[in-house]
Length: 397
Figure 1: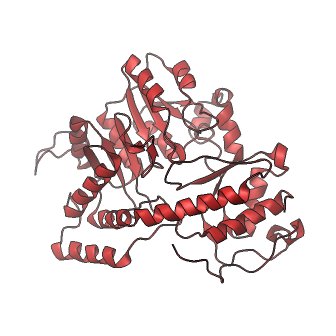
Figure 2: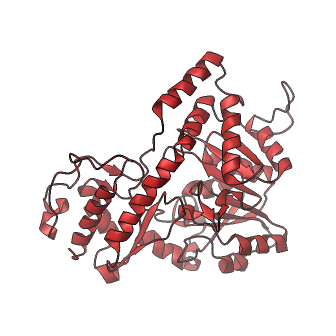
Figure 3: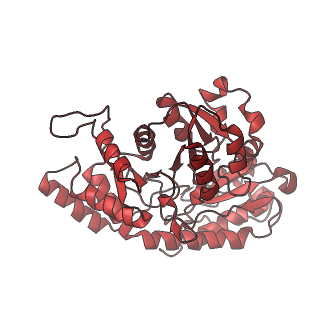
């Protein structure tokens, strides 16, 4: 982890609201802090792998790099099968297809909209369910209320890397003979009671997008314990080809490229460094936000790849959206996740106009949640500076 850079800051001390950049002061950061700025591993090792790919002239189609990446991800997830694909959305899409889902699928609205879009693309009906106020993951009690004869699956999201209540969801799924699928895009390198989060359910869709703790430039994978399901996934990701010239299913071209797998392998080799940076930053946020009225730091997954706060305007006197405006003026690009909720985005808002009435927790979180910068491009010193801005914004300097 690199030491604090003295040239990152403008040396603009924030002691009172008039000092804030939004009020005419100098921005605290000369270099912008981003949420999800990519972690970069050993460049020389990546370039070595890239050269080997070029030397072999095998750029895609299940080459050595992809197979090695699948083995490493499977070991990390504690499952026997991992099928690498071009991105996390495609991982979820192929899993839905391979599981043969039909009719309705229970899914949270408080998630990245791609989770719902995958269902829509498959002609499935997303039934938006509320989440637990503490974990932000599916509330099993609300899931049970929404189950019907048309339900084919429960799709949980391990949000912020925090695992869903997998035991209760498994019980509900087994009782109705439903598929249990997880969107684990946030959950790589996260554990629940020592068990890798990617190992739960019939299948888990992973993301290795540039913003994730381990990135493959762009990439995804499906982790599963089911060998037959893995075989179907491999068929579907390669346009349905079961051999050189025999098509056995309606598939797509969803393959991961060799260069993406090379980046993924290089990222995996630096995972310990990435985790150390995240955990140091998270500890700094805990220290600097502790006791701040109206600011709740959410307990996220064990990778600490996400730093999430809830902003209660009634207590701290500042709305989440105003705090975003203040931080952006200081070059701290905090983000509103997942605003305003899938049920208020197209096409779902028009199709399900009354959905918000059964999603009170989701509606509140969509107005209060704020994600703050972390990762190897951020230092604990940056965190302390950003938190000082929050303190001034709510009058607690």
